[in-house]
Image (cartoon, rainbow, N blue to C red):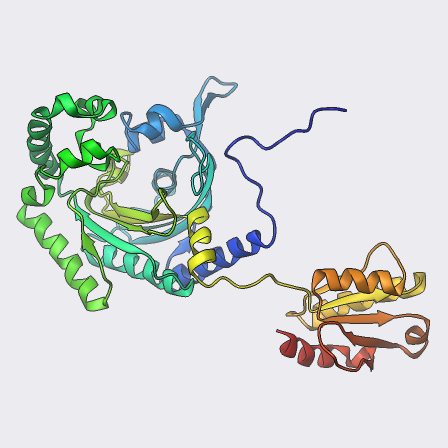
Length: 426
């Protein structure tokens, strides 16, 4: 016997009913974002490796350790996308979207990082991201935070905490970087090895360390908010005033940074205490320099991305996801002529009753066997066609999940009758 092939580690198959939960989350996000004026963009899975090195940063863990990178037949270095913002910016530049106009875009799909797989974190994972371009003021951040908050309400989520911080301007961060490095140098001997490595290349990333001993050292570190310029303070204050007016609760976290080098100004993150170690559900912030950095015109920009695996997991345990979409009806056909007629009637019903979920029996079988299949699927009704029904051009309706007498209905009357019945069945 040949060896059974299995999925690559960290790459998962998704079946019903989980796939139906994904569809509900995706459709909810599409509706919420669409109502706020965000249009969907479909982006390639593969980009030039240099796009991510230039945007995310060569010293980040993503570029250094986690990307799936390969040379194609032309010798060009390509990578599976590890995140969506860089590709969205690249696409906007290529198509001239940022030439003095505002753009609100969103995207969805798989991303790829070679991480250690664990619950809520996989090597192929899925994101929905939203990006707003060309809006300088804090109203852009407030809008995106409000849109995400509306999605949480739609999914019945209430175990989410929003944290805010500001990274200020490039000059602000440079002044803070010097103060932070000076502080950390005094404690270098007891820093964890990863933080020691980052001390020269990317010291702000040390603020995101999960090592307990390093976290204890950081409790005495300077706060970046003490180094913000007047302009950066005013912007951050303006965002907080808007969130207060909207009634959106948040906490200030002076050590909140993002793992991508392109962030400037406001950064934010929603976390939960319901998923264990993988507590981040949605993260984002400003990246005003990225469009110019990648060859476009100077364009203010802000966005967020949420992890669908974690969102669906959270909504399934602490939210309100719909139950599985069971068939309203199962078509039982007895005999070859009835099978053919049942298929014709089924297609007519799907045309005339768009909401109808109808499964047509396949593979023949006795009445008892077909009804057993219908019950296993959880169908509410059986539509039965045999010789008698064929002769009279009728269909018998048998209720499967309740004690109601069966009835016989003329084929021409079926659409109206089923429209009423499926409203009762749900």
